[in-house]
Image: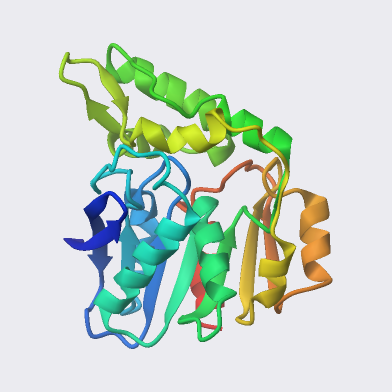
Length: 280
């Protein structure tokens, strides 16, 4: 993996967005993989390594406020208009006419919004456990653990991380350890916190939450879609999937029964589904 970066811009000024690049820079196929709300681009290491073996170019950004990217410390900046603007800058930086998009949760929402726009550069879209409807109950559950928790050591952080993220599925100890290592920051006093700006939580924790319904955006998507669902997910409900089948773009659905929100795309079965569909 090669670590690179670019400058995005907001009302707060310029900010550095870091991304990992896998595979040949001259590949005819570029895949952009974008993570969930509190996650980062290193979640896609196993998927990126597998796709790079097919001579694809894989790009895994840390969305602003997460991971290795800058924090702007302003809750009003953290929202989909900024994320879409930054990802558009990223695609321009890559100097390609089109990309395939793999998005988990928030990353899928960003991809769906971009795919719905006229002249979108997104050729094929993989939505990982997210759709155009998210219930208030699911948002309240997420708001319950997003914030600025403090842990005395890495062991206690990993234990809390496993509990809050049990929907990631039956991961191995090594996989949990890998995710934890890329999800942590050490604070000045020696304690540990999560590797995201606590300000990203304010839109969830300080607003009156309601159901999110973005059906007009879904209806505007024109590219083919692969929809992945955790069988126990509370974010992508089964009835939402059924409604998506009746409207919007051409869509294929694959469900992973043992997973909740959201499958981490780390095992060979999940990687294989994405690899085969992108080549289909």
